[in-house]
Length: 329
Image (cartoon, rainbow, N blue to C red):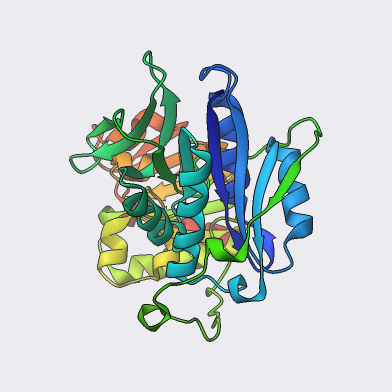
């Protein structure tokens, strides 16, 4: 039997999420190394037929689709029941999930039911010399990249944050859509299930960092909240978005959606300007694909300068206010 790489295609607002298309693109890269593996997808939701066909444009040759009104909103138990049923039946070699709020809970639940492991929040995936999935994950505070293997269990599972890979369309091909029967997600213990009632959205303040072509990022070296507010105003004056590293978020100066890194967002702006950013691997993995990278830091040995196109060795307090005033004028 030929090997198979599966991608769970997550639906958001009735549309397949970008991270699912990114994973299908990565699966096309891995497939030849795995001996010409078939690329297939799972898709759960309501009124999803057009989205199932769309997956063919990114390399999926088969889509296992469960289309039912009761699956319109994500619910952990029925989703995990359906996907573990499918994986046990069709036995994929590799099963990939987006490390989103949904995928981060769904993937491990499926892995537990299949009695396999799952590498979470990966920054890269590759096939090693033994034809096994090697999942790369930052370790020891981001100082090293660890390689996680799960060679004795199947499927080999991993989750990847949105934006780590870049989605690209494949040559149009035929896709077989296989309907998943209702018994696949039938719950033998409905009293133990949670039932979603509604989706409540809170739009972020300012431009989302995933959409911005210019990002101004604050690290622990900015000093205080007043400089974070200045970062926000500078980003706005440049028509971009303000972002941060973990220490700034932990101080409570901004909302979680502003953090760049393996536990935050991955971005590819045309211009990234960092102030007081140290350059931990957890952060660099989320922004090193930016077009032009400029960083201001008074420490000449800071790791962020290693990935910078322009490095400014200076005190943030000497540069940030003057730059903002110059742009404002």
